[in-house]
Image 1: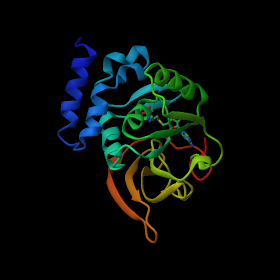
Image 2: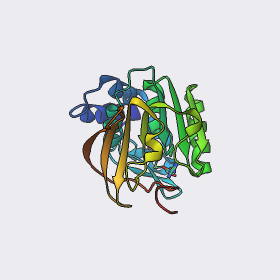
Image 3: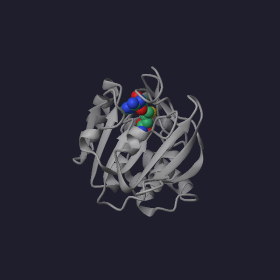
Length: 212
Ligand code: SAH
């Protein structure tokens, strides 16, 4: 088997064919994705696909993660909200690219293991909270960017209300099993909505989203 560093470099080279944001590629080029994956799947950590992380959840596909992160247009000074910490891999990328990351997770055991991995890797600008009934984390709003990593029935108004004017939100929305990826830029009057392509995410569970 190739060592992780070689495998990671190969994946990044592949992503660079479509991802233009150098900061996104640089972050992914040094974050050890294998540490966010259960031991039995580590040999697959640098395949461009999702992987199971337990509790019926998955760590997202690297290409989709890169695409979504690029769409947030992070420069380094932002406060970012992430919905669906899962493994914490996406959280680490956001922590490298923004000033502060607030991440919310529904499954306490996943929040706990993500916290541990992120702590061990030395991230100090991440706060992970257990999801409450209302989507997001209004206590710390407004956010400059919001990344939703679970599939919603629609572009959540509750989440949009936590985004600052000029801020970007990326959210998969559609049916419970297949969605379209949307980038929404909040504006004073009419918000700007762009489609980024089709995708498949696990369901976003909660008030204004899907039932458990
Ligand atoms: N970004 C993660 C993706 C994990 S899958 C990664 O790459 O590892 C999506 C996660 O969203 C799951 O862990 C699921 O438990 C969580 N989730 C579902 N509904 C949620 C909600 N309302 N609030 C917060 N997290 C939620």
